Length: 414
Image (cartoon, rainbow, N blue to C red; front, side):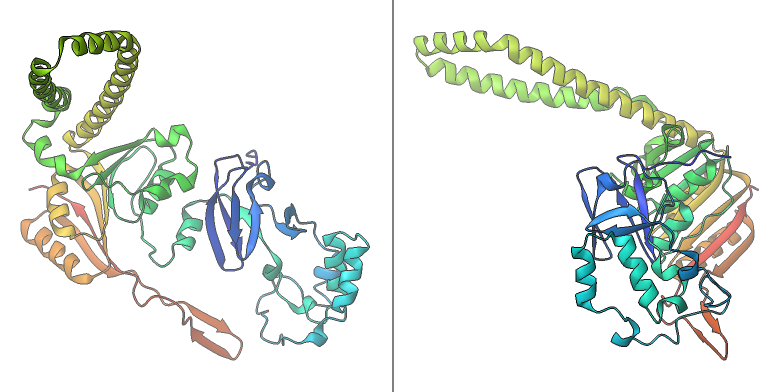
């Protein structure tokens, strides 16, 4: 049996109460506000994922199950998650609670714990026994793809054909939700290539998964604006020297202009001022040189690291052996598809999501006319949720009008 994980400082956790859920990153001194409840992060560190909590005197504590006769006597009260049971017959009324406000305040003054007061309220409540069990739950869960999709269910994007050990390219503008779902599915084995426009990676949802270093090691990124350089063969030859030489060239030209300007000023300055200036500069130069050399070394190290990562991502593309290509972006998918399709291996799956049908129809036409794929399928991913109850059935009213469209096909070569 797998060891139960506990919440560590810096973890992202998912709070869930009824149908409301939200992700927070936990720090000991950070306050969290969820469903009008203020919680300190240090109250959660060390607690097990999946624990049910309740608030007592402004503090979050692990909830103790109420007595069986109060909560789980299904034979007499029908409490619990019984099929067909709901809260339709509950009527808000002050008469439902026999304890008055004065009696509750008196119990607090006598020092009764929150659990004891809740037990008294349950015993004296006329309607609590008929409530469904989920109404009194407050849980802290470990985020995963399913739970995060519930959080962001206004835009539920789908993933397809992703497995451990695969090489998957992802182009998305879903704040890293699709990318994180792919990484979770692969389980730290394989390669995930994140293709992003310009300098905007925008994948903050990836950290909500709390991936280990092993999971993060499979992630590579490559900017789409460098595809042209990769295709004409100038990217790998220029990455190691071009950026550095450009920086040095700019710096040297600036230095020349500063030197010329300094010489012109020095020609008009007094000799005594020059001597004093030289003495000050000579006195400060050792410390400044050390700091400057350290900063320059850090810049060079970071630049070298970025270069190595870019080369690794470029080599993945140059293999032209991608197992899957997933596109879920707000940009026009047609040019993205035609540009990236040559890097997908034959007999591999391509999936494109778009909120509108017309761009996918154009993709469908291009792929079919050029013979780039088979088994093309364009479908709408929207499903209406229905509430089915005894003697009444109706669709859920508070939902979006569309779930977008999916185009999938298998890549072939002529």
